[in-house]
Length: 347
Image (tube, rainbow, N blue to C red):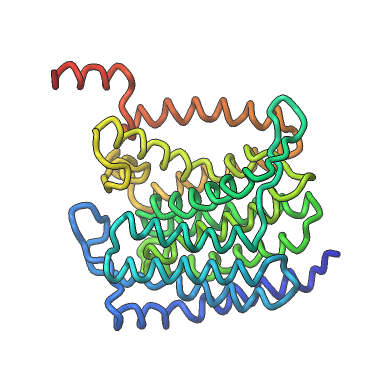
């Protein structure tokens, strides 16, 4: 049963604690050497502390005590493991393989004892029971969101703002489905992003770092699984895909771009969405605001069409084509013609 008092308390606690602890997390990060040092690939011109994820985790943990939230213990455990992995990576720069292995371990813990995507909607109508496939599919979904939010974390306030807008949409979806406990989890995610946002928006005073960006990705995955994708009375997976269209398209383009160049998909470059907007002359604030507007639009479309599976998939298809064309126009990927010309020149 929905308790508005719990929702309000959770929002206040998560926002207040995260906001209050962020300056402390910033000082701790500086002492521990958790610093993003400028290099040719980075946007920042001065060293920046990267401990923001610590404040977000504590704010989320404290607010989760407000009410009875499904699978909260395993969610917090997995979230802590993801944060710890990211902090270690921020400090010592782990190899891509070791970093991914750590992610798989944390996600395995979550999927074994937490919620799973057990049904998936058929675009032609009806639901498909996944059975044993629920474990690998849920793991794929969680791992994708962990990395997609980490990939896009390249401008002040970009990841936090997209996470906040997405969390608001997921709160709305959970309420529409009558999953009030899951909605409470989503409200807490809104609160921690709201509390951290003033410190991270341009000009940022502290960064999320890999720890914070991966943590937000994991929490978005947990909220979407618990509140929208779990159980037979679920909605189409196209709905959370629409909500998170900007980072998902950015990840897809990064994979395609690196395959076109013949380099490993984990190799960093400056072809991401935000990099291309900066090269087109946008300021950091203008670039992130464009991302916010697009996310707000796609999230609104997702909520409005949530119970209309065929229409939602049609919207995903249409917007997918629009994003594909836009990605080529801004230089995130090469068109087939450009790819053919490059191969001809190399030959």
